[in-house]
Amino acid sequence: MRKKLRVAAYAICVRDGQVLLARSPALYSDGFEWVLPGGGMEHGEDPGDTVRREVKEETGYRIEPVRLLGVDSIRRVRARRFRPGVDHHGVRLVYEGRITGGELRYETGGSTDMAAWHPLDDVTGLIRVPLIDIALTLWRNSLTTPEDEH
Image (tube, rainbow, N blue to C red; front, side, top):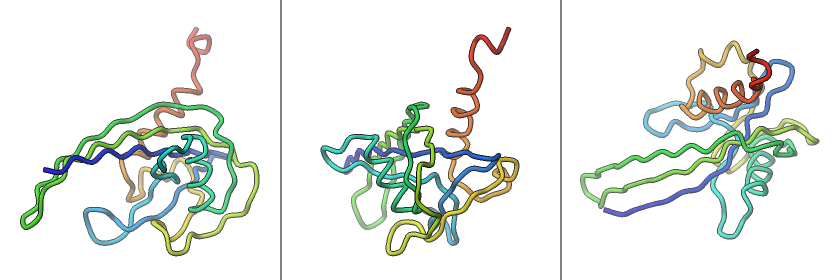
């Protein structure tokens, strides 16, 4: 079985009660699903540069990674009928991103076909990857400091 490690950086960009998402072909079914803008690191690339590059490619926006909200790790072992299986380990860095420029546009020839702002209250009704919920939890938890709880 082939082992594959992928390190990726993603941004959760929230403004005016909306979150920026990109749409991608669904990985395990027909149709599309919403994803966080971001993607795989290139060899030797700084994670902050990765998230800047990926968000610009997928949405048209320039961002500044404000802070690292967390690291998520996922492992999937996929057996294949006529080819060697894959033991995939994904390490996903989730940043809070602040839009600093650019204009919303769709990626052409890439892994996504559109980008859009979605009201935070509507996200649960979207067909989406689980990383969106993980990132929103990290973001919401970052808004609450120990001083806020007293």
